Image (tube, rainbow, N blue to C red):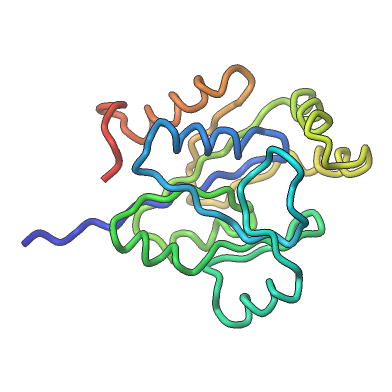
Length: 190
């Protein structure tokens, strides 16, 4: 009996407003065997739109963190984020997962996953600013702070797929699929 191959982890990073969540959702629609990891976030439930997440209070987040409930956790923009520890079981069972993560944890991926890829979603500062204003979650000062952090360096040894998300979501997704499946863009991840 052949050993089951572990699943793949697709780590999506990029500045606020680059369209990470929109592209992740579109990838999951086109590739039904890739599952989005639902993050834990210390923010109130969004009124409409935005990512599907577990929105929890800080004390509940900290308890989960202390109890080893997260595979990864980080802080950004005054919030705490975490990916559930159960992702390792899913990967070991052969499932492929995609998650919006922080650049601050990129250097931890090779210690945790046999198969992983980093996808950097980016756009011009003008487009980022327009998108942040449209979503209406941040004040003008917060938008300026996020734009100041929009460019960053990927750790050495990591070669991300870079998607400049300035045209259509379909274009971005087709580039991701072509990169994941260079020999056959219709093939599903196994």
